[in-house]
Image 1: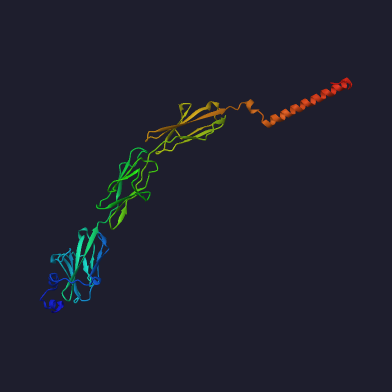
Image 2: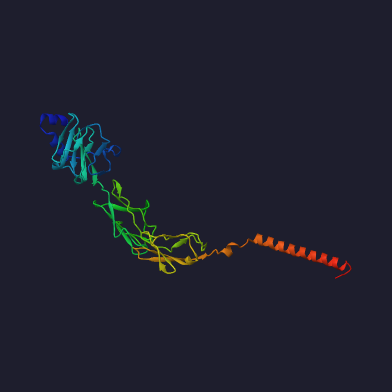
Amino acid sequence: MEPASALSQRGHVPWQGLLLSVSLLTFWSPPTTARLALELMPANATKGKDVLFLVYNQTENLIGYAWFKGPIVNSSRQIASYRIDTQSNATGTAYSGRETIYPNGSLLFQNVTLEDTGSYTLQALNTDLQAELVTGQLRVYPELLKPTITSNTSDPVEHKGPVVFTCESEIQDVTYLWLINSQSVQNSTRLELSEDNRTLTLLNVTRSDTGPYECEIRNPVTAIRSDPFYLNVLYGPEAPIISPSDTHYRSGANLNLSCHAASNPPAQYSWLINGRPEQSTQKLFITNITPNNSGSYTCVVHNSVTRLNGTAVIIITVSDDSPQESSGLSDGAIAGIVIGVLAGIALIATLVYFLYIRKTGGSGSF
């Protein structure tokens, strides 16, 4: 038999027809160690990227290659062919303009689309007109777009009702992963994931559940996360605290009281003095107080969203420094006076005794 190149050159059997007609003959099965092999690089592709069908373990007596779309050799599905002796190639009816066949049989597929997903078959023909086939599977996945998070509320009230988060994605056939504070989420007593992981339910919300919350979508090629989502947890007011805690003041001093209560949004403050409304401020300041300012001072806090209230009371006593009180002596001064008085009494007693002795001429006795 004449070599295939001679047949083609003489025009008896066209190159394209030869490749197809050989498929009807006995296929060549080389030893296992030398079997024609195919590797896709990458194994899974993203829409718009390039894929290389890398061929290796080629034998030395090959005369050409042909690529087909699908699992079988079919003229209507031929993409391209390459003839080794003339270093020429030809395209088939399934050629899209994005395929390039190389001298070693490898095929570069550029700018792949979702429709390119499927099997591709390489036919290698040797000088004995024996053909070997190898098939590879191309999987093309859509480019992932950043998902978004929606929820039934972004301003939940503490300990009231669940918060349901949903991961919204324009791409189908993806897997979902949730993260809170950059840690992956699992089902727990307070967290529930839907069967497909697309929704996350937060039960019994507390003020520490602000987030951030993120959802991630994945396919075999890549992954992408949403922007962080935060909760504005409403709570309070907690029991207010009045400072300073001093309760006794002197007349003429300044009274400066401050009230604080943990609350979101911040609490509204007002004061009552002996039950009478006074200033609607967080701080209460009164100058030059007198005993008339003694009494109960009540701080009232209110959260306009949670509609909760809280109060704290402090009893203030103002003492009046009268002139008599101002002339009072210290304990040391009083002790000095007592000692002085006792010394004076002792001196007087001695003087009386001396005078008595002189009067009686010293003969008397007690």
